[in-house]
Image 1 (cartoon, rainbow, N blue to C red):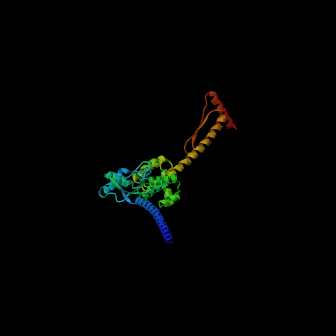
Image 2 (image 1 turned 180 degrees about the vertical axis):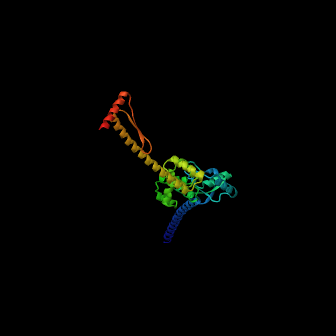
Image 3 (image 1 turned 45 degrees about the horizontal axis):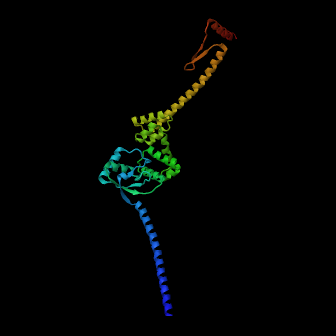
Length: 315
């Protein structure tokens, strides 16, 4: 009885021990999962933390919407970086193709850091899609007014062309009205010379929109140069364009009228040539005046023509 009781107690003790090990195993698996999740969370959180990268590890974005960097403004930023360092970290992401890190936002700070001779720069590492990178770059530059009007228009065009966004969607992403986006895109229709002057800041967007009413590209460029030379206001340009359109309309009307008269006189020449049997020319002058020339090639032919004219006179 006693032996049986001990045996039962021993069996129960092994069962309890195994049960305890199973519990420990369950806890071990739970701890491993928690540790894995904690590591993933720490890794994700690390992306949002500021860190230092060697400047040679970072490179620019070839699709950066800003192409023109004002030398004086960049020099001012370089001087500031040289004395105080970079106060706001660059936004970057890993570049799987080229290696290192590609700039998402902070191209000017990067260039200033290079010019200032910095060895390391502060960054925030994030992961974005190509569309998100484009949108962030555009939004950052637009909000800071870092883009000239043509660069801004080209950036909007890229979102529409490459990512299938509508003008309404672009407007929503950059917090602007659709009319603003439409007017910006219209600037891409400027003639090359006028576009360059707009990019250089020598004419304004208002000047450029007035120039768009000029159909001929050479005339656009000529008027753009005149704006710079004479420092014309937008109102003055609009007035000049209106006058030019009026003159062009008048010239077209004259051309049409002249063409109609040419056909009218051509018909008369043909009729007289048919009657007289020789070449006839009507030379028109101003004020509805002119001269009729009848060709003849011999005295006999002249006599024949005179006989025809006399016969008409006798009738």
